[in-house]
Image (tube, rainbow, N blue to C red):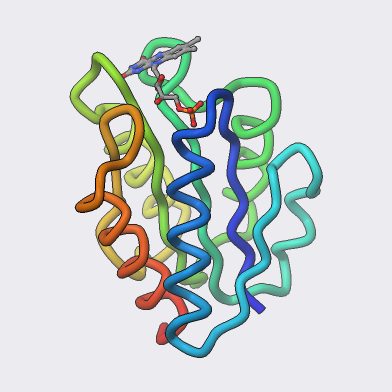
Amino acid sequence: MIYVVYYSGTGNTEAMANAVSEGINAAGGEAKLVPVSELSASALKDEAVFALGCPAMGAEELEEGDMEPFVAELEGFVSGKKIGLFGSYDWGDGEWMRTWAERMQNAGAVLAAEPVIANNAPDEEALASCKALGEALAKA
Ligand SMILES: Cc1cc2nc3c(=O)[nH]c(=O)nc-3n(C[C@H](O)[C@H](O)[C@H](O)COP(=O)(O)O)c2cc1C
């Protein structure tokens, strides 16, 4: 079972999460799609592989209510785990994702594939990249 934990205010990152889950299932894994508000970070302590999705919020930051504290807790035990990151943005250039990926790698996480970012609603290409991310996680 591979968790796909996400925050999405207006559905764009949720659509990406669905595609990541599709990729996991297509590659023989079993995706468990959960909004971050419904899971405590400690649920991932025993998981070797998982995906996290969050749009750019604030000023190139993670969503501060649920995802930021979730990720802060994760930093304590994510070392050695294989993860996938994805999310949607609008007017920026993806800075929030570069910062997030670096933060996870500094905590010792291994990115199973390049993070996937989508400008607003994911187009077909972004959805295909999300699916490929899911497949990489299932094979990690
Ligand atoms: C409060 C707020 C802050 C945002 N800050 C940024 C930002 O710093 N950079 C950016 O590129 N987009 C920013 N956006 C745009 C969102 O990332 C974009 O609308 C995204 O598609 C939302 O994804 P969602 O539908 O999964 O919530 C912000 C949106 C909101 C509502």
